[in-house]
Image (tube, rainbow, N blue to C red; front, side, top):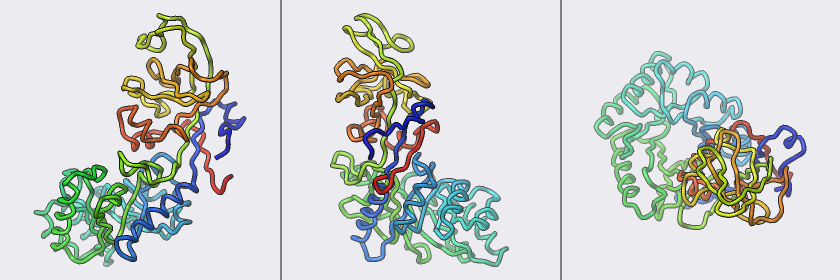
Length: 377
């Protein structure tokens, strides 16, 4: 990426810069697609692009993935599906949250594939297909322990009798804790999923999310559906991240001041200077997704500036935050500060904010200036 990610016009508008490396995103998908091929030749690698492609921008992300050959996408809501359909006219688009009541015509018109997770959904889709005289595709979500969405084992027989009216395009379930490679839950879920599949008509199957693809014995099956790993998140916490960094985030110093020992900073005077300190105020706050909890957590969030890690001090405000730059090389108004980048990963920022990287990514603020980098440009 370029040395200075903050162009002059962005400085003039006071925007934080979010840079998305589309080449790294593409490479991550290729790595995952190659990994999926370890299971069985022909295993497909799709992509989860819900929540505006995890906060990075649905349109540029989807286009980059389409160029790599990705043909199956997963989003949460039919509205996301409609937006994606305009970008990817030939792709298969699965709607993970299922079929809202009376939404069958919308799904059919936009060629969206509902992931049916309850008997009422299965019955409604089957009835619509009968009325239309067309066996439209749908996926079947089987609950293997999440108790969130999905058909329980007791409903599978009833679902099977209704499935004659539509095309069963995919059987799928969702891991509870695939990132915990030592957990026995994933193995048990694989067993339950295989048992459930035996009660349904033959159809392709999908179980692996990002972390599921890195289990000791991954159930690659017919289709993998990575999300977090595509965007640079580590799918195997505690081990070296096998994915490339995709996101960089840079704030700007608005003001620098010296404070004496005993002075406070931020709302409610939650931080007191232990000695004479130099502080910098940044154009970044919780309205931008820089979580307020980050300053309350321990060890707490930090930025990288002037060659040093600089801790956030005081409470994070809606539009502003304060860092201690006392130990950094001399900085001045207008200098850039790394929030995410070569020195601070999504997972590191998440840990210091007492959350997960998924939340960090999906809360990336709409006020950011988003810049997409490809082929070194």
